[in-house]
Image 1 (spheres, rainbow, N blue to C red):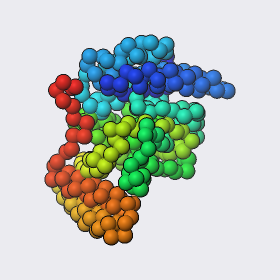
Image 2: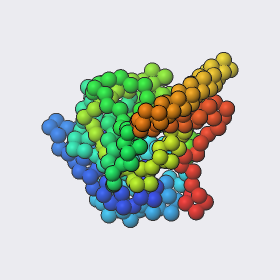
Image 3: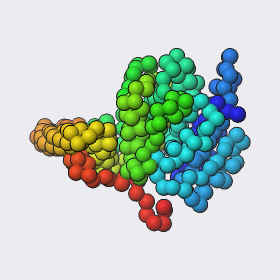
Length: 313
C-alpha cells in the first residue's frame, strides 16, 4: 500500500495528462530510490469530467490510478483525492497544466520530514507560449511568491502542495465544495488549517512550472482574475468570521479595503498616464479591479470564475 499519493485534478486536458503523468511516475520512483527511503508512491488522476475524457491518457501510463469525480468543481476533486488516498500519510497536489522541476517531490518530502508540518507549499514559476504584451510584462502579473525554505506561512495555493493527511484529517478541514467553481477553495482550506493551529511551511527548492496558455495572456483575463482574487479574499474573510460581530468586521474590512484599492488604483493609473509609466497603469488597474471584487464579495457576491456551460459541465 502506498504511503504517499501524488494527486492530479484534471478536466478536459488529456494532452496535458499524457505529458505530465509519466513525469510524476518518475518523481515517485526517484523518491522511492532515495537512500534510506521507506516511501511507496502512487500517482492518482482525479477527472472532473463525468464522461471520463482523461481515462485513455491515464490508462496508457503504468503506475497511474484513475478515478472520476462527477460533482463539478475543483474542491470536490481535491476532497475526492483526500478520500482516495486513505492509506497514505502524505498527499502531493499538482495541477494538470503544471510541470515539475527536478527534485520537486523529494524536496517537499524532505522539508516535511524536517518540519513535521501539516502542509508544505512549493514555488510556482510561469512559462509562456508567446512573448508577453508590454502592459502585462510591466505589471509583472505572473510572478509568484518566493520565500526562504522553512518559512512559516498562513495561506497556501494547492497547485504545489504536500499535505500530511494524518494532521489534515484530525483537523476536520475539507475543501469547500460550494467554492469549487469560484476559486478560493485552497485559500479557505489553508487558512482554516492555520487557524486550527496546524503548521504550514514553505519549500523554495520544490518548483513547478505553470504553463500559461495564450488565452490568459491578455489584459481582460488579468483584470478578471484580479476581480476574482479580490472577491475570494472577501468571501474567505467572511467564512472565517466568528459571530455577528465578526461578520460585520469582515464586511467592513472588505468594503474599506476594496474602496481603498479602487481609489488608489485609479490614482495610480492616472499617474501612469501622465508619466507614461506602463507599470503604474497596469498595477493600478489590477488594484482597482481587485478592490471592486472585494466590495462585491462583502455584500454576498461570489464570482464563478470557473463556471461551465451546460455542454461542458
